[in-house]
Picture 1 (tube, one colour):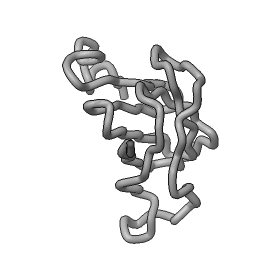
Picture 2 (cartoon, rainbow, N blue to C red; picture 1 turned 120 degrees about the vertical axis):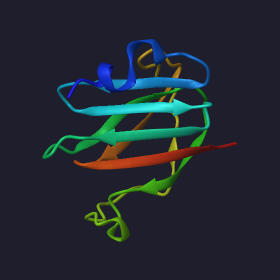
Picture 3 (cartoon, rainbow, N blue to C red; picture 1 turned 90 degrees about the horizontal axis):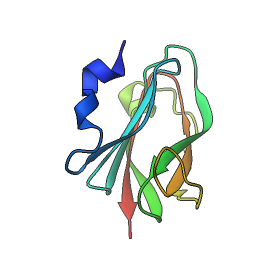
Picture 4 (cartoon, rainbow, N blue to C red; picture 1 turned 30 degrees about the vertical axis):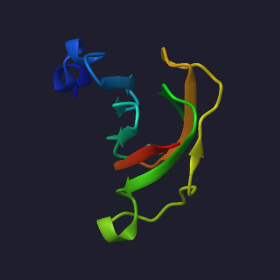
Length: 114
């Protein structure tokens, strides 16, 4: 699966949409919408990623809005912290980053809280 084909190379920084992390071998993609809502996807069939560093543009606290790994969505209910805090660690063109656990075949949606 080629993520450039799915998203399009020209959409990387247009308007309020920013693709932060795109890794073909890991089958992971993240994107930010309006710097407030953050989407992470792990399409890998077997690999889960612990402490995956993901770029974010604004500092602060990020709270889960949707976690596809919870039992109600047919997931395995692997542990997620209640909140994620940005770190002053620049990554992939962003001034800040967060670290998350992203299980295989899962999606995580976070929102930034002021």
